[in-house]
View 1 (cartoon, helix red, strand yellow):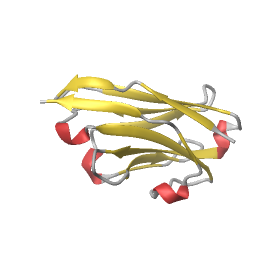
View 2: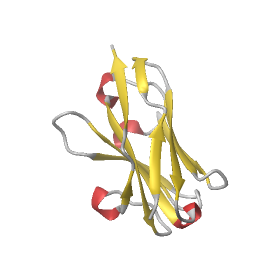
View 3: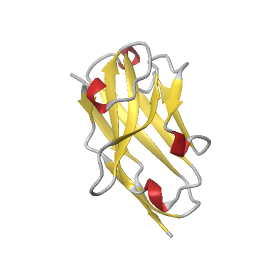
Length: 124
């Protein structure tokens, strides 16, 4: 079992920045690929970014490329999502997820463990 706890969400103005953190416990963190997803009201959960277990490979959905950066610190069992130039369309609950594997993964169904989510609200 892997337990995931997100933090760092909040209210920010358009153009602002936030850094989300996801702390993992329970198993060897470095064995797990990690992903960030988000879900806005009335919408399906969508992929945001993913990073391989060693941190050498990452992928982003097109709408966040150049604005968001995913990273991880395996010594601290934590994955981060740095979000810059935020806009109203980024408003959602953000979830981190984990699965064993050496690559990065896009689909929610590919992940085995999920956090409870953290709310990000961008005001115009």
